[in-house]
Image 1 (tube, rainbow, N blue to C red):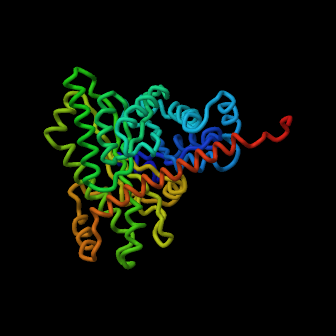
Image 2: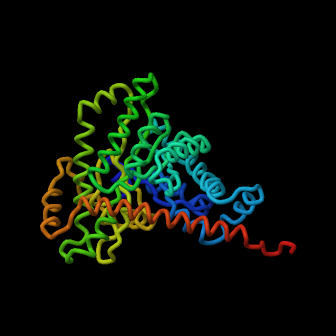
Image 3: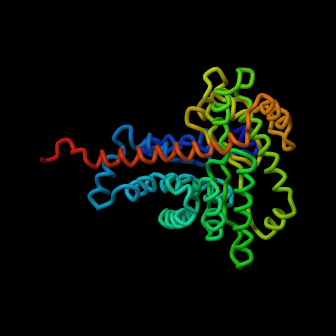
Length: 363
């Protein structure tokens, strides 16, 4: 059994954290679906910045959209939806076969809206309607303002990928918003089956901790935080409140491990994939990490539902002076800022491509 199939058999979904025109048009994504058990895909502003900024695969579409009078964010979302609707169609058989549990792709609202609840709600509804795909998540950051938007967007029936979650408290706030949205739908006589995932960013914990802690502490904190969150997730799914919603037809907001590419060259390139193997969860992998795991990864054991030694590990870091609550807040804000920087760079690159003359075109 291949490593990727072993994870799939365990009950974990493997999604690809990447999207490019070449990936779609070369048949590479279709091959990953067929051969590597990939059952979904995520994107973010940095991924699109890299895809559109490198090479010329988007240039023709940019020129067509520019000539049609589109610019800025409107032009970008047309480009993104060209890719993501094609990817959604590739995953649609998986989506149908799993009754909506799997086979998803994700499109993020502008990160510039991270602190604006009303505009996030409007953008999420507009983008979901424009995509017109039942297996496309709208990504909303789990900031305090984003969490308030999530309840409303779920109530509106829009599937949501809650992104930039770092701590147990972040996760529980997102889960609470999701459940309130579902409960309000039930009260209004609406279908409670609205999908959502909660994306936990893992490796960024270790990047931050490595700057503050000695080497024996490196590459341990992210996994401990994730294990703590997995316990909270397991407890929530076993709660009476969730059981009532499930009995009414709701489906779980699945836990998704994000930022799972190894950043430390001294560590295993499959570190986070192997450590985060867990049933009823998702791991979205950078392409390099997916290929590494498919080549030499191992499924050694499943994550403990009771939290294992997570609290002991976190306590060690606290004794060394690390404040995990403060760091979670900082990491979320840095994540928003990083995606905002990518967003600005992406729009600048599109403007440059619009202004670049086509070679061979008449002057």
